[in-house]
Length: 199
Image (cartoon, rainbow, N blue to C red; front, top):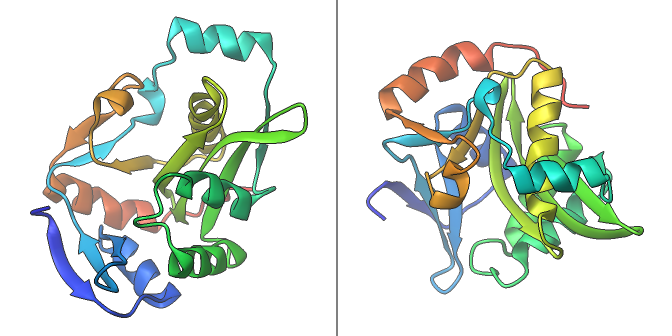
């Protein structure tokens, strides 16, 4: 990737928080035992007032067959996101993001069906910014329901930015767009000063 701005062997809670505050996020490269730090240009965000829900997702939400909770099983959500993708969500990531969660700087959205965790998403929260890290599903539409639940919570709590790193066709269907790194960093300073509560 050409957006890597640094490589370290160290990965701590303090490094992670400082990075997010500068518009940077980490990934792990376990085969080399290093962490790469990324700052893409452009940056993908989902405007909270323009989140798009497809007809099929509306149908799933109307059926109300899923239960959505917040911060009830952060570890379980991370484990779900790591299934089949152990490359960058490794042991150290569980430690660092788990500690961020304990400090109120990372949160999860859980989707349940018949008492079982079937989907979810997690990310980092600083001020009025939420940086979505990953999501997963074990049943059709469960990760989409998690994203819809996240957007609903962020709207309720007055958040300003939902950042999703890279624009993909999957995210585009929800209304994700790209903005220049310069614009993102300019907005970041104002957003970090906001006082938004996730819970």
